[in-house]
Image (tube, rainbow, N blue to C red; front, side):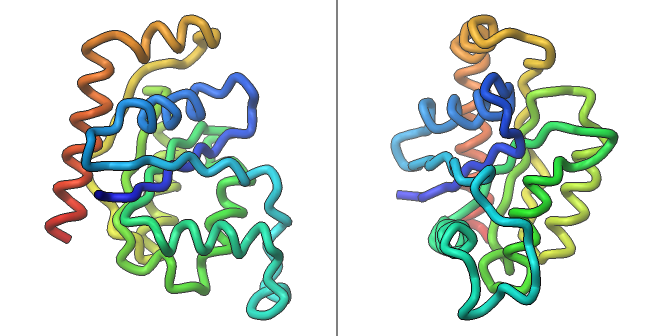
Amino acid sequence: MLNLLAISGSLRAASTNSALVAALARNAPSDCHVTVYDGLGRLPIFNPDDEDERTPREATELIDAVTSADGIIVSCPEYAHGVPGGLKNALDWLVSRDAAVAKPAMLAHASPRSLFARAALAEIMRTMSFALYQGGLEIALLGKKPPEVEVILAEPGNVLALRDALTAFADFIGSH
C-alpha cells in the first residue's frame, strides 16, 4: 500500500485545488491511500532561527507527514504569476530537512492557466531535491462553483483520469 500526501496550495473554502486533491483521495486505486494535508493555514511563517529544537509543532507535523509519505501530490493555484505564499512557506519548512530529498512528487492542476506557478513550483521542488514526476494531472475547474466542481470531478472520464494519474505516479514511485 502506497501512502501519498496531497497538499492544496490554497486556503480558500471553495478552492478548486482543494477539491481536486480531495477527489484524488476519494478515487485512489486500492493500492494507494491518499491523505489530504489540512495544516497549511496553521503553519507559522518560516524562520531559520526556529529550526531544530525550536521547530513549531505545526511545522514538525508537516515535516513528519512528508517524511513518512511514499510520495507527495501538490495542487497549486497561481497568484500574481507565482506560488501562493502559504504553500511556499510550507515548502520553506522542508528546505533544510531530508524529508524532500528524493521524495517522489507529482503536480496536479485545477486550472489550465496556472503556467507561471507550475514553472515556479517545479523549479522550487527540483531545487529542494524532490524527485519530480514529469506526468501529472490537470482537470479544468477554474471559475466553477463548488456544486459544478463536484459534478465535473464525478464525471466518469475525470474519475478515470484521477485513477490513471495516481496509478502512473505509483509506477513512478515503484521505479524510483
